[in-house]
Image 1 (tube, one colour):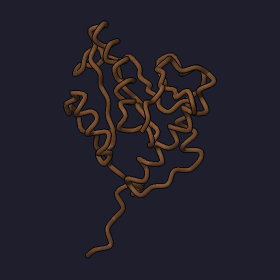
Image 2 (cartoon, rainbow, N blue to C red):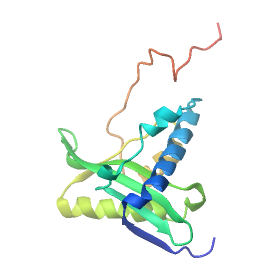
Image 3 (cartoon, rainbow, N blue to C red):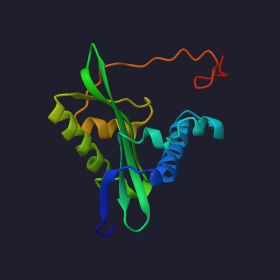
Length: 161
């Protein structure tokens, strides 16, 4: 890959289409890990609107536009104390392994250090790419999310006797 000309900046209203497209791609990928297909309505429920861009940063390639974004929020709990919750960190497929995710993460890491806060995130157990990335960034497991799948949407009964 040639030298990329990338700019990291706060998201703007004009970025929403690209951000929501990346969000759809991520959720389709994650659903696929569990053999699910998400409806248009389910995907749209995860879309951002202009009022939700305060803590969203994008990476823009001058040639094609937004190729990555990160969203986060402030929170507090008894385990992590005051912290930022990293909600999304999404990179277009062809820009992965080029340091793009690290560019965005560095912004949040600097904010957290300056404010004396921790950073919390999570992903699905089968999302090995994300798990490897977060491990490289220094994250350690703290909680385990459990699901009682009463609708048998993800954990379907096996046909074996």
